[in-house]
Structures are given as structure tokens and as C-alpha cells.
Image (cartoon, rainbow, N blue to C red):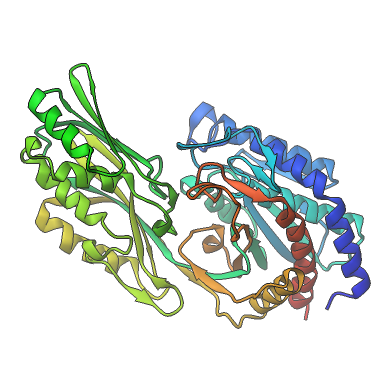
Amino acid sequence: MVSKELQKRIEEYAANSRKALVEDLSTLVRIPSVSHFGADGLPFGKGVANALDKALEMAEGYGLTTENCGYWYGLAHYGEGDATIGLFSHLDVVPEGNNWIYAPYEPLEKDGLLIGRGSTDNKNAAVVSLHVMKGLRELGIPLRSKITLFFGCSEETGMQDIDKFVEEQPMPDFSIVPDTTFPVCHGEKGILSFQAHCSTPWTKVTGLSGGVADNVVPDLASATLANEPALLAELTAAAEKAKGIAVAADGNAIVITATGRTAHAAQPENGVNAIHLLMKFLAGIQGIGADREICAFAAETTSDCYGEHLGIAVEDEPSGKLTCISGLAATEDGHLVMHYNVRYPVTHKGELVKADLEKTLSPKGWTVEGFTDSLPIYLPADNPNVQELCRIYGEVTGREAVPYVMGGGTYARHLKNAVGFGMETDTSTGLPEGHGRAHEPDEAMIIDELVDAVKIYLLSIVEVDALLHK
């Protein structure tokens, strides 16, 4: 147990770090860092490379040793020891998307929040971890473990960065991944993604697209049709009765736009899928002929968040229900392609999901391609490290600390002895519904929670170090 004297010094250090935490997080948020594989002659593009350069510069300024591993990822190190505790962050962000109230890359401090893309997913983890390592050095806290901080560059686009790390670097003995909500995430559902291709070509629809990434509930989707007077009249009349649908003539084309509400694919019930809205609307339009059948089936498969209409619904006790979204839709060579993202329970298997999908899709003339399966991870809730981290979180915050399993995917699934531990906010930001959380517009971090996180991680590292050397 940490002494009361050390606990007091840690609390003072965290409180005194508030201004620097906000400044450092603002600095990283200002750098647009959507990962683009192979862009600009770099592994993940110039934006992410700029963010990594700045994070490594910060680390060196705080007295840490650093490594730039070919812009695949970066590392910062503190201390020596016969064991290693890993802290894992990522600097890449999801695309800006739509409907921002504030500018995504102009960080704004307002009402106790820091607003900007990456403020909570996941540049906050990079900044807090740097101040934790700085605190270990400045407070002279004795450890028998080395601390390594990982700066990822492609967490949102396939996690090739962590694959490279696992290939090149020794695995930490225990790893904390601050890319979830508190308290401790001791398991992550399997993540399965695929594309469903419709074998029947469009006859009336000339173009259709929606979404920004397959792991984000899309808030915008659109379709185009030839501008025929009778069809325009039917569409306009139907749109007047349909929520979230707009119809406009644009020269020789009719443009139908569906507006939903974005959310993370791990919590799809928080969003409204614009692709579903568009498909449901088009399925009711007589003037598009045989295309109605394509749209009706696409609408059916996206009509629930739990895979019921795809024939894949399943649940278990540790992790609850399977979830499923279509995050992207596109027209390719005159055919509809739907991209799906499935989060399946920790006791289930991806190959069983795939078999059930094919039973549903094949008879309807759809083929499944591009299958990827990231296997679930699970540590028992009574694992000593899980219990210790829960205890520390509860003592610092006064909140209930029960470990949980989630649908999100983090670096933890690529590591051994790893858990998700903070630091996305699970309390209200005070922003409008659909704004403020990870992957949403006006993504925001509660500044007081940055300060609390410094305390939580400093205390946690001390206790994990002790457990590793029992």
C-alpha cells in the first residue's frame, strides 16, 4: 500500500500539473492526425508523423528517453528494472465527420472541458502518461520495473502499429491501455468485419455512399437518381413524412440525403444509422423499381444493433449481446457494397458468426468478402492486478469500481497481461446529445478527470510494480 505521505505528494503533483496537461493536450489536438496507410511516403501519413514527432519532443523535454520506430510507432522510457510496465496510447484519430459545433482541430477550453478531435480518444492518454512518467522522476518514487510508453499511429485503421511493436519489441510484463472508460476493462469482445456485395446491379440508383469508417455509426448517407419529374415528385412527397431525409434536384440528378447520429460501433445503440435511414426510405419508393428489393434487404440487415436480422444474434454472461453495424456503404461497378462491423461475446467464435452470416446472405444473392477477425481477450475479474486497479480507482474518485467487459477494441488484445483502464469520460459533458464522446463531433475531455487520471496511474504503477515483484 502507498504511504499517506507519498499519496499526498502525488495529489499535489497532479494538481500542479493541471495547466501543463491542458497545454500539452491542446498542442497534440491541433495536429490533424487521421491515419492513411502509406501516404506521403510514410507508414501512416504526414499528419500522424507530425503528431509523433511532437509527442517524442514532449517526452524528451520531460527527461525521458525516446525511440522513433520508423514512424510505425514511438516509445518513451523511464527507469530500469527486471520487469516492464507498459502504458499504451495512440495519436491517430478518426476522421472529423460532420455536425461539429466547434472546430475539430482548434482546441477549446470551455466549461471545464477541452474540446477537440483526439481529446479523449486517445491523445489524452499520451499526455497523461507523459506526466505520470515525469512525476515518477520528479517525485523520486522507487520502482523495480521499467516504464515504457507506446505512442501508436494506426489504432483506428487496423492496428498495424501494435503488430509491428509485438514483432520487434519485448512484451511488457503487465500493460495498462488507457483507451476505455474507468474502472477496469478486463475483457474485450471479438471484432469481426466484412464486406457484403450484392450480386444484383442497380437499375435506377446511379450512386450511393455513406459513412466515414466501418467502426463508426454513420451520420450521413446519400444516393443519386436520374432526375425524372414523376420520381422527383414521389421522392419529395415521401421525404415530407420521413425523419432525417432530404431530397433535392441537382441538374440532371436527384440527391437523397439521410442524416443520422454518429456513435462508436461498440455502443451502436447511442447512434442513428444514416445508411439504414436511407435504405428504409428508398425501399418505399415505387419509382426505383427492382432497386427497392436491394434497399429493403439492406434496410432489414441494419434495422437492429444486435445482428438479429443477419442471423448472428448471440450473448454471454461476461460480455452481453453481440452488436453489429454497417458503418460504410458504397456503389462499386454498379453494385451495392455494405461494410459491417460485428462485436461478438468473449466466449463465442468468429468462425461461427461467419457461418451464420453466410446462411443469411447467400440465399439473398449477397457474398461475403474481406473477412477480418480480431479475437476477444479476457482476464478473470478476480485477477490481482484487476482488483488492485479497481481499488485505487475507487479510493481516488469515491465511485463504485466494478470491472467490466466491453465491445470496443484496444491494443490490449495484442498484448499479454493487459487491461483497459480509463480514461474516456463516462459522465455527462453537458454537450448536446450525439456530441462530446469518442468518435462523436465535439469530442471532449473533462479537465478535472485529466488531473484525477495522473493520480490514479501514479498510484497504480506503484502497486503493480509491487505485485510484479512479490
